[in-house]
Image 1 (cartoon, rainbow, N blue to C red):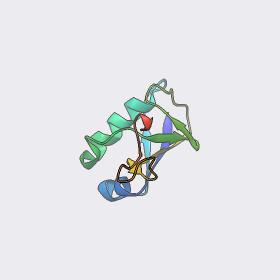
Image 2 (image 1 turned 180 degrees about the horizontal axis):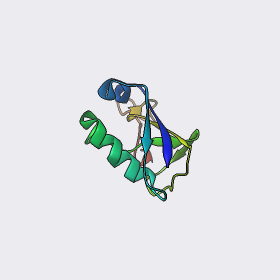
Image 3 (image 1 turned 90 degrees about the vertical axis):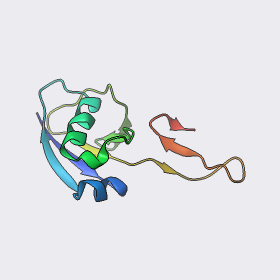
Length: 95
């Protein structure tokens, strides 16, 4: 199946690209796509999977379908309940 992958912020720099087409077997998951993309762009290895599929945040076991658009987002932080302690959004969501 054919997918369009978008990179943002740090991931855009590490991939030296804003987007790339990717072909994977039918039934592939978001985690499998992330592993494939990390193989294409080794600078992304070691970063957590934070992604949106067709504009909706999804997690690793999400099955993908032909023609979907996937955006990979690097970890980011902001806001805080306690001074000096940032809240992070990463693979586990708000923390």
